[in-house]
Image (cartoon, rainbow, N blue to C red; front, side, top):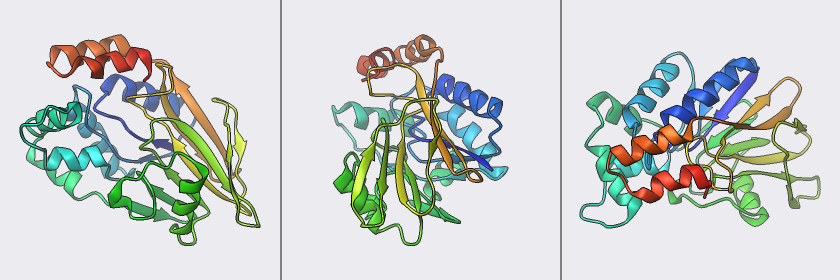
Length: 247
């Protein structure tokens, strides 16, 4: 099975469509959405409709902090994420709300654990951005040998050897990384809709469960059109500028 791992879509329809087309061209047969389907971007309805349709066909979906925020937005806040959550909340249909509210915080499939942030108290939305926090997440992953998440908007890989020490590995986009089951692995697959590593290309990862190879992908898309939609919606300019700057 080739599993496409997509996180932090952030209501970016253009980036999502590009990543799904790329995954299909690379023979993906299963899809996992690792949270933050909405927030920042201008097309939450279109993104949710796509994900809901794919979930009905068997895709796995996890809830993220921006999904929670859209269900219970903070009123009268000047923060960009709070303003975006209020804007999004006003545009969700009842089925879309019910879908978001029903999503789990983490999910296990065979030897894989899917979570938006850390497997340790996922509701706290901890950023797994270094080896220490990766080790903490793995400690709460049960029997799973492979943990996949997002939240940090960057593509990172950590592994735990036989002695239990957790170390970082720097992946190269497009180059498969062997991730055998005699070690434990934690990957943050990056952001489809809001990359923050200084590059504009959308991010996702493809995991081959037969060969146990993980490939981090970068996908060019029309980020100018996505930014234009954000501006037309009256959302904060920073949300649009990020798409070009990748930060």
